[in-house]
Image (tube, rainbow, N blue to C red; front, side):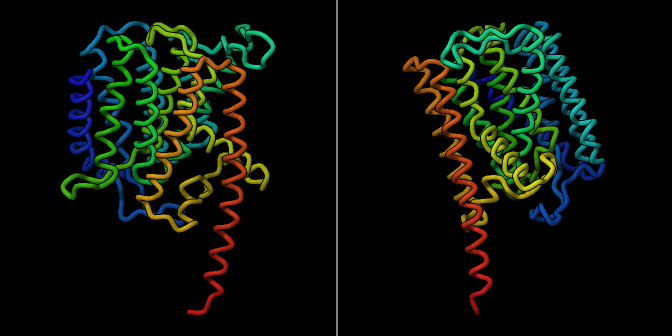
Length: 353
């Protein structure tokens, strides 16, 4: 898979270089405002470059079966809607409808849905009937796709978390050409994007993923994880359903906790703000590099806990209980850290120069 990953890296890098000036001409750029503090106009073409890489290289390296065709169709729909949203800021209802359609394409086209949850509640194996599996799958797809979108608020953040999640997925998955091609291409493309996004080389244009990119990555991960936990044809394996929660752990937990805090404050859950983990760490005075390191370590720890429980053959209910406990602890820590940060900022403002 080294050649495939390297090819994806190279193609994505070339596309980012070619698309950056075009994005500026079309106005597909992110401009600084009261919530976004970057410098200058940054092209929002990371997602479209990664998608084109998948679109070109998947049929190049393998014969596209029905599931991969439906995946590319659903992912392409999300990318198109994301590009329109990045450029014109489309209505939230339209965005929700598009994501539901993508989930339905997964279910009825790709023949993928969440039906087997294992012994999740310590009573017996949970096998949901189709009428319950369909809305559950739509919620799962919608949640994880938007979890990746919501945490995309700092240079390098989504790229780093994605590579960690894919690395964990690699550790768990069977090493066959059929099972590792999609994550390999996604990792190569994400690595190239990360190089441009961090601005580590002044000769490379700085780019952002945009909604098109963050939702593409989230959707691809949830597609692979549902396949891997429900005996799909792509990964050819069966992982316990709760393990998927740990693989996408940090973005999912951060989204749940952010929504809980917004509901408590009476704010709309879909309205963007600055209350995610990287905002809390910024408020506490950590530098950009320190925040990336802390988030990476936390993401690795969450993934590691899930992998260890899988290796030790913990029951599904125990894995789910540990995940819920981690979420509650995260809520407590973030909530109190945010209050502490606000108090420290207030104290600094009162201190005379």
